[in-house]
Image (cartoon, rainbow, N blue to C red):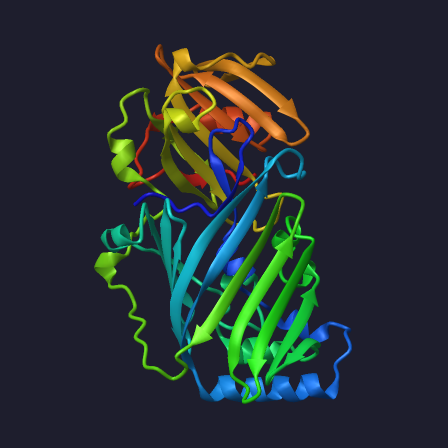
Amino acid sequence: MEPVHDLVIPSRNGARPRRVLLIVATALALTGGLATQHVSAAPTAMSFLNEARDFSAKHESATFSGLMTMTFAENESGLGSRTTSKARITGEVDDDRMRMVIDHGEGAEEMIIIGKTMYMRSAESTILLVAEEFAKESLASPGIVSGSPAETNQFDLDKMLGAASKPVVSKLDDGRVTMTVRLDPKTIDPEFAEHVKSFEIRFVVLDNGQVESMTQTWKGPAFDGEIALNFSDWDTPVKVAEPTAAQVDPTPDFDEAKIANYRDSTLVMPRVIPSGWEMTYADLITAEESDEDCAQVSVDFDDMTDESDDALYAYTYLLPADCVEEVGGKAFQAGPYSGYIDTDKDGSWVELRIDATSVLEIDTNLPPADIARIFGDLVALELSKGPTAAGPSI
C-alpha cells in the first residue's frame, strides 16, 4: 500500500515529505479544554446549548457533507506565495462509528473510526478507493473530552457539545442560534499549536436543539484552514462497517510493490539498530519529487520509546551515485564506507558511498559516533524483517 501523507513539510534535502499532523482529524477535533474558556455566556446561549446536548444524546446517527479549504505558504515561516486547495467531505456517523470520504479532485481519502480504532486509505479518486487497503491505527482516546486531536472521534456531537459549556452567541435569526467558541490551540495539542495560532468553532443550532452545521476555522503562519459541515438525516439508519482483515494492510507505511521494482541503486539497511528503535517508513520517491531529479528509496528509523520532540531518528535515502553532489563538510567513515558529514545545531547530513554505483544519504540527529556505529554495518534491505533491534540504547 502506498503510504498516506497528510499535512507534510519537506525534509532537509526537500526529497521526502514528513508527517506532521493528521490534519483532518486535528482540525475536526475538540477536547475538554473548551470547558475552561473564560468567555461570557448569556442565558439564551446556555438554553440553546442544553437543548443541543439533549438532542445529540437522543439522536445518534446522521449524515454530513461540506467543504474543506486549506491555504499553504511556501515554508513554515509563512513567507512566500500561498496556494489554496479545496476538498469535498461526505460521511455518516452512528454513535461511536464514523465514515468520512475526502475528495480533493486529484486524490481522495477514506477514514473510518470504530470505537478506539481508525482505518484510513487513499487513492487517485473516490472510485478507486475500493481497490485500496486500509491502514489501521489504535486510538488512545475514543471520545472528544480527552486525548490529542488525532486520537478522537471528531463527530461525537454529544461529547463535543458537552465540552463547549461556555459558548458566545454571535447571531440569533429565525429560530437558529450561532454559537462560537475560540480555543487556544495549546489546549488541543502541543504539536497542533506549533503550526496553528488561532482556532474557532461555530455551531448553528435550531430551536429544537438540532445541530444544523459546524464550521471550524484555524490560522497559522504556514497554513490556514476551514471545514464547514452540514448535518442532515438525523436518526436515519446508517451502516458503518468495519473493514475486514483482508482489507487491512499490515504495513501501511511501506510501499513494498514500488520498492520491489526499483533497480537504480543498491538497497541496504543497518544490520542492527538500537533497542526500542523500529523501521517506520519505506517508500519510493520519484525523480519528479526529488531534489536530485533521480528516483530513490526512502527508509526511516525512529526511537519508538521517546515521544518527545527531541526523539532520535535516522531518515535514509538510497540513490545512484551519479545523482549526488558532494555536500563537502568533513570526511566521515562508517565501517568500510567513506563519505562526508555536515553537522549543525539540528543534526547531521551524511553521504556514504556504499558501492561503486550507489550512495546512502542520512538525515539524523544521532551523534556522529553512533551514526558511524549503526551505519558501518549494512545488509540488504528487507522490508518484511527489518534490522535487528538489539543494539545499545543511545
